[in-house]
Image (tube, rainbow, N blue to C red; front, side, top):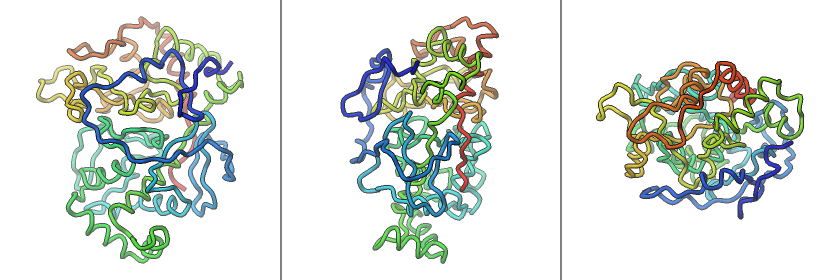
Length: 382
């Protein structure tokens, strides 16, 4: 009964599979993009690993890891930059840095401050607040399965986790400033609890802006969510979903057509498209003057057709990641489902796939129930 029984293999994708119904959507080119080419990469196969499975639905390398977690079978392998191979020691170092507020300009924020477990590794606030209490313009997204994403940030401006980490560190999130990264790296590298570790993980380099962000990225690549109730159901366990969730799954695929953008197994079409996938659903537009509307992807690609379009977020762990959308303006999952099923908010660039699905209250509840089956129970903390 697997959803993927009638899927086709994409050449060169290894174990990655994709529904035949979604090939056109995911492989369509994004015109006029000015993205930088992705870094040279190596493939991380979904091969058996000596790392024990936690069975929790998510996995990270243990604090004194002897091996790395294998990619979930339900998701397949992913790529890593050739200049930043993942090692257990690098993951341990990256985790320490991810939780360390001393990386920020004023010692008030760590990466974890915007990506907490209690919010599904996303942000609890509608819009993130950075170092020096700087109000940022967007909601902090979930970190689960970021290893699979070809582009990072809501607008896809970063082409690797390393670039994303450096951007957040230099930018408003951590507030250090691009010109001050080297001095901050020297400061971190001189700390007794870090010096020997950096020398061991990055011999000859020590702590630099590059090695710090490489370590953080290595840790983030271990944040894997691929053993949920849905994954067990898809693998053949009929008891993994209750009847409401099964009805919700049917709606997700058919009447509500959520899968057109939230494509399994990642529940986001942003994974398969080389430049990411971006949609205008009308969030953050109603009642605002044109000059006050976040241009989204258009600011990166300079493509007018991507005005106010944002990357499709994964729905894995979605019941835990409220509030929703790029501006955190929708408080509950039910409200988010109703907004999308109702066709979004009409504007000059509304995605053509959106229309009113005319769902009943019971159907909305079934969809919300199904989305709960995409939850992982893992933790970013050791």
